[in-house]
Image (tube, rainbow, N blue to C red):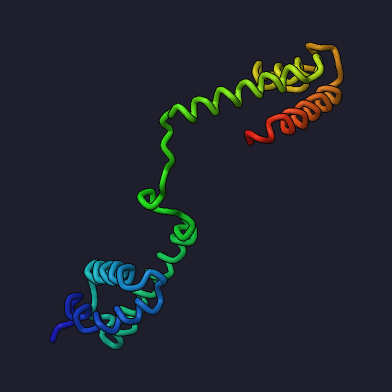
Length: 168
């Protein structure tokens, strides 16, 4: 019987599949994928007569190399750490009356907390968060040091965090 890719594949298919299932964490489905890729590689090989001495070793080497590549790709993509999009539940972003009320209450609390800050601290916070100025830009505009801006921002964050603790 002539040595063909099809003959090789049919001869070693069962033992190769069992070997691959043992090597792959995904089990049978991943093993079948590698098995088919092994067959494709065999079909691409032009001179199978060279391997007539030990065709089993040759086909198992192809499969082992494919498993190594597959595991390397899987590791680099970190597929174990990804969740299927279909499995995730996403909360509804629709504004309900209760959510609207909570939003209004938290905005009122924020406004009250901001008004409770010392004038300079409030001004620095607003320039940073709403006008999106950097600390050095705020320092230049108010003619104060950058360190003073940092202290006022720290004070503002601390005061706002305490004031809004129930909403966070």
